Length: 115
Image (cartoon, rainbow, N blue to C red; front, side, top):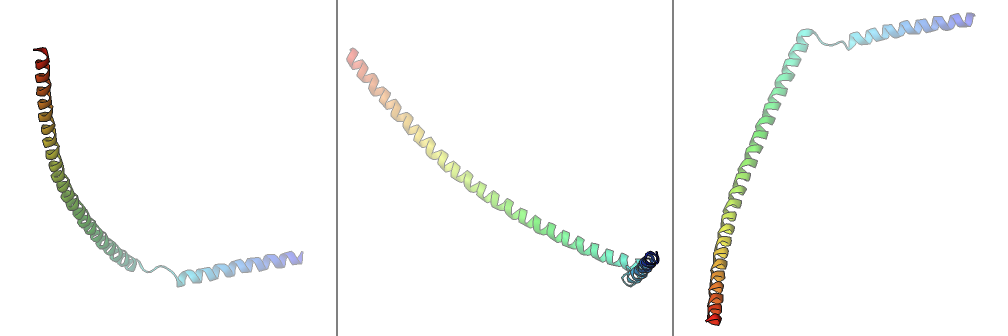
């Protein structure tokens, strides 16, 4: 029984010693004063805002560059498309002319056979 009491006493003393050590550590590493904390937070938020503004500017410049490049490429494609369309239009007109000439030849052959 004396052994149990000794263990309980040692346990209680260790608990109290741990509490005292913890309280001392808390005082040593306690947060800074409210004024200092507010200044630190204000400084941190200004720094974060400046970084965010810089990131937004960089993103805007990048997006502008992409849009300009896209506009240039689109203009090139439209120009090429116009050239291709003009080539196909000419090709189609030539094919129609050839078809008309062939039809005329066939008409002449048919009319020569039937007359």
